[in-house]
Length: 283
Image (cartoon, rainbow, N blue to C red; front, side):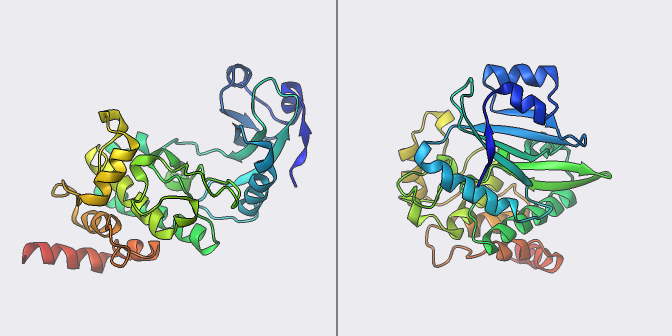
């Protein structure tokens, strides 16, 4: 169960040290604020609005993650129900703070070898989630964070969807990353996650989405239709190992789409990369 109900901002301030600027954000309705524990370590407070009937299931899923620890997953520290709060939020989550922000702010600075090492970490994090029966359900670059610890970049997968398993009719995955076979909650699987990883990598290397974007005026339904009927293109300038990962992740046919993230990570092994390069040379 969640910790005792916090009734107002003052009670939150008694528990956590929040800078004046961050407090202003909290009071004005910002969903994420930086705070500090009683021991001084930085954390993030995340506010969410969840329907009353789904709160218990959400808390249960949060606590499942709280009891799991992995260096490539944002640590889930605590969760609170919010009562009599000044804003329409029902839950406050206490999460690990990633001190270098989203991977998006680092992409132009990464060298090729560093990109490979970063995505080995990304894949390792997803392997851990899947082995523990957890699907992320909203894979995208914004949800891949970086912490810099002793000059080393450590991936932190964030914003895992924690909606209860009986929330069957709702799809919360961002449309640009949604696998074409997924029509409802029940049909979302590890292979759906792999599709999203392929779409995320395509965006990272090209700055575009593989099957169009709502920013281009294309509707979510049109994106779905394109992904069902067209093969991904525009891969020629993407480094060879990532070409293979994207191609094999964005297969419409589930029988030939990659079945596990371990297979994706294996594609970044030195011997496999050399094999793909030799294939390209002697094609």
